[in-house]
Image (cartoon, rainbow, N blue to C red; front, side, top):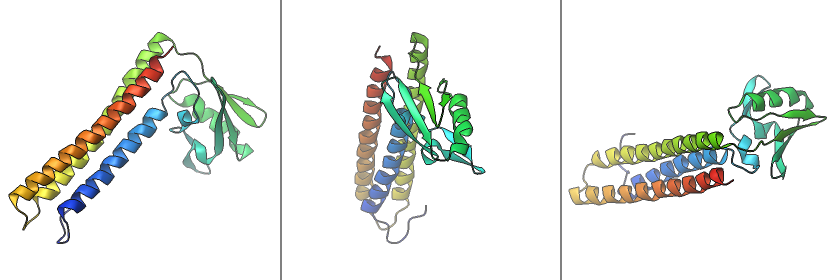
Length: 189
């Protein structure tokens, strides 16, 4: 993005915060979809179902609830999509075995064994790193925009870069905290 004449350092910082917030929220959503010991409707958020000639998020074709600690229930809004939803859950990389029971799909959550827990910890670390990369990318892009500004003193640019670094550190810390909580949740027996 080239700096427009109205671009100001506060505007660049605001845009950067917005981009970093998007990266953090995306990472938080992804981490929330990783299965730990207890059922959470967010677990199925990343699953996409082939419906009506397109790939839709599962929450757009049915409701997901967690009536018990180790069970999810998916209630399709269109009964004709039951098989497609079941197939999408079965073929996801979550290792789940859904069962159609009348108008609902029961998704029991098996206990995690030690190896599966270690595998999931690796996955959450990878997802957290992707979030950090998004945050670093936002910082780099904003820093480039700062350097391209004309009629701005070198001191103002340096100050802007310091503010960008503070934003970066704040968002990376938030991802690290979210990661710590998720990791503890996965390793909890």
